[in-house]
Length: 235
Image 1 (cartoon, rainbow, N blue to C red):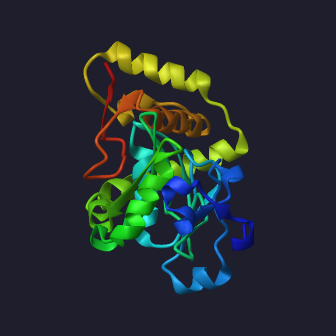
Image 2: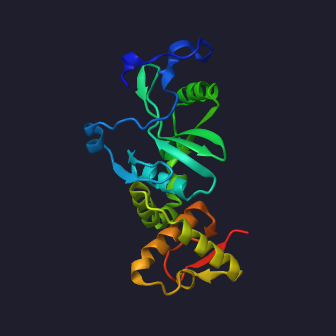
Image 3: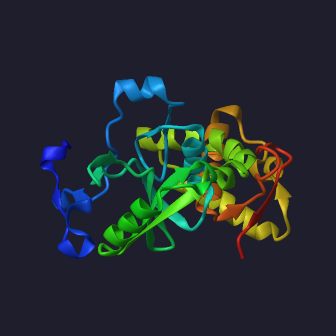
C-alpha cells in the first residue's frame, strides 16, 4: 500500500490528520523493507495464533508475540497490521490483537513513551471501528522474557505441525482423559507413559496443543518444559 492509495478518514477525526485505506480494514501484515531488516533488531518467527511467518522489528515485539501465544485470553494476532499516514508521516502499529473478544491495536515503546497528540488521534481513529489503540512499555513485556522463551520451543513445533497439516485429535483426547482420570497433578513423564520412540512425537505434539489451548496447564514461568514438569487438567 502506498500513500497515494490512502484517503482521509471521516472529518470527525480531525479531517486528514490520520489517513487510511478504509477498504482494507481486515488486518494484514505489512511488508518489511530490506533496509529496515538491516537497520533494526529484526526477527522472524512462524506462529500459531498468526498462522504465517511473522516479522518483528525489535526484540520486545518478538517476546510480546510469544506472550500472546501463551495467553489463554488471546485468540489471534497480526503483526504490523496496517499502514496509516499520521500527520503526513507513514505509521505502522506493532500488533493487532483479539483478546477476550476485544480488539486491540498496540504500539510497543521504551518506557511506554509515545507522542501524546499522535496517540489521541489514533485512539479516536480506531475507536470508530470498535478497536482500542494502546501503547505498551517494552519493559513490561521484557519483564516476562523467561516465560516467553520457555514457550518458544513449543510454538516452533506447533507452528511447523500446523503448516504441515498434522492431526493429533486422538492423541489429544487420550492424554486429556488420562490427566482428568488421574485427578491430582502428574508429571509430563508420567502422562506420556512408555510409548515407543516412533510414537513419542505424536504424544508430545498432542501435549503441546493441549497446553497451548490451556486444556492442560503447567507453570512455564520459571523453567522450560521437561519430563519432571507437573501437569494438571483445568477444572
